Length: 343
Length: 109
Image 1 (cartoon, rainbow over the protein chains, first blue to last red):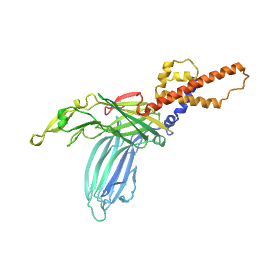
Image 2 (spheres, chains in turn green, orange):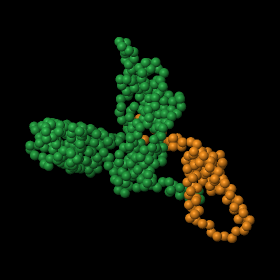
Image 3 (spheres, each protein chain N blue to C red):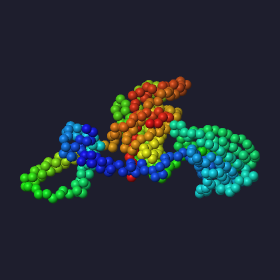
Image 4 (cartoon, rainbow over the protein chains, first blue to last red):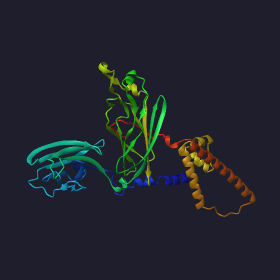
């Protein structure tokens, strides 16, 4: 009876997890390189054309040509895997490239491989014509991108006139991950607990957010000041704190596990003065592989370094290099994550 | 014995360790399991009515006594579990982690 009850309970409690494991096409996530042609309008940037190429396997080679019409409001793109679209108020599509096209830019590339979640592509870009003149300057570079990484490859510039307000068109590469609907439609509830421990005790915060296989979900915990007794820090009127902010990106796998990107701001431990904040803000990523209903704890070690503090007043004002270890000694920051699958 | 097997043993009228039962019911997951198992048994008992049998008056009285005792015990446990749930903000207490990793950029768990 006990075994039967346990089995029945498992069937009652875990239907969502079982659903998430079913991948009708049997495939997982595939990396793809995206080329975006972005026109800079006075009221913001708009993407009007794009190309997308799957990486690896028997995927088509990366190849695209982008050209402009008489002004940068008219942009054309061609090549296998490219598509020209006109967004609301976006640049007109220049139907065909002609010898008179003032700007012609080409992209060719190949997939090199994957290491540690970074997908390497070797890209060669070249201006055949620029500003109405023939050109032949090419650049070859190898990019190693993670999902969501984006960088500008080149820019086309033109004069602003009364008929077109676009001065610059940028050509941007972006790494995206693609999967079938069974994986991208999976939904989860993410429980996040931030546990901060020091000599004064333990402080806990709990956040709940929803996740799916389509896009990252941001999160932010409160900033917690750390009392500091150092006379130099007090004289510099510096604030010392811990804070956790970032985003979660879930990629459900066909085997039922979940690949989770945890992006966090580098300023988990920080020092702020009137002049600056240490360390500089930068997003860091850790990729976890976990199962639904399991809890994973991530420890964030205190940073090692020094911060420059301004002390004194008037002519006696000076900068003092202050090592950060004493500031964060005894501080422990741990983030716990648990995902629950939704039916 | 697994942590929560003691709850199942208690509900199945099998031998169990009362200290272990108290420990299991002190955890939110244990209380949740108890409620799930009680609900599951209710569903099973409705779907599977007992066969009609000839019962003597003495056996019927004994069965009533046993039923009353089990009912009293179950009600006491449910009351205690509900009280414990009301006393503590369970969602603010993180569960025990299955894995602990360090945020060292560039590696995967």
